Length: 451
Ligand SMILES: Nc1ncnc2c1ncn2[C@@H]1O[C@H](COP(=O)(O)OP(=O)(O)OP(=O)(O)O)[C@@H](O)[C@H]1O
Ligand SMILES: [Mg+2]
Image 1 (cartoon, rainbow, N blue to C red):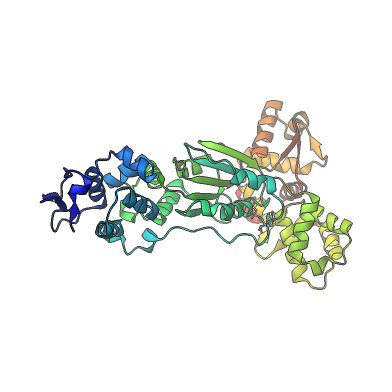
Image 2: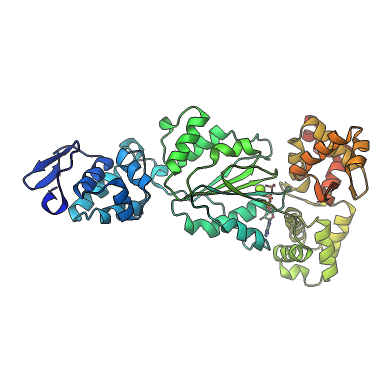
């Protein structure tokens, strides 16, 4: 494959290339790697790496890493831009394409994950109700020089995952190198939270790194993960994080990536982080959600005030509303008024459908508490007044005001307690029902066994 030197500059002084008359060829039989080819063509064009990057409209780090072979699986678009900037002819483009196809190493070529752009997002919700303000934040500002991270926290079942997945589907076209969805199982039935090292290994494999190249130590895995993502535009959803320690190693560094984290716990992340706490829905939005999920035909006879009361009994919580509508749909004889009567009797007993239940969701939050937090939660559930201050809590918990405030803050950080005004606390209605059921020993035996 000849290279015309006279029009394109002097011989590249690089191993594997040889002058031949007024042309230059790669040494016969030498299957030059992509980096060596690119460097030869760049030197032939008398361009520095910076000049080539500038001409191609690429980051100079991309050019550098391609030439050194540090960048695996470059984006097709980057290769096309380089071919144009280097003014390669048809034959040279074919050579370039062949060398690019050769990446990563032959042993990896058969691994479909190595060549597939990850599109791991779960199905979007059919129609997301409300959340316009939060969507604007999730889709908004992208940092110019570091990774953008948005954390979504809120109590069990507020719709964190639904919102994160919906936002991610909308953002996907801006992240052509793929979308990753990692369930960290921070609050999963019969599962402990995923270890960061394990999550990194899975993600690295998805990104095309062969298993034998994945380092043993979590820090080295995290470093490799950052290297692999450094020049890519990838959207990453880290769902149901247990805490900051679990997610920090999973945060890339480059500005091309964006991360959405969901958690029941308020998180403090590195990088350019925006944090959103997801509240329950307004009554109007909750009725809209109920109507959409129950089916308009099931609610036509129900007066608006009855619908409003039903969603209030569900604590305006999307998970509870969803379960209530499943109950209605699976009992064709029930009217909305009948559902309301049942919810009035014992909401938690009613808010169960198949494997979904509000009690089970709250059991998992309870299960993540320390023993003194569990005791505080149970005792708070046993009191009746709607809201209370630190002093009242200290009396109830039989402790000092300082210790009581610490426990209240901890419960509030995991959204088992609300702080509607400074130093005033209250339990969400369903949380209070749950805390009181735990206090009375009426919940899932597994939870009681672990308390
Ligand atoms: N705004 C919404 N519009 C439509 N459906 C919603 C909305 N928010 C939540 N849902 C539905 O409510 C249910 C609970 O939502 P989701 O699982 O997202 O809650 P979560 O906050 O992630 O809960 P967890 O803390 O258990 O992870 C799901 O079925 C979801 O599809
Ligand atoms: Mg979730």
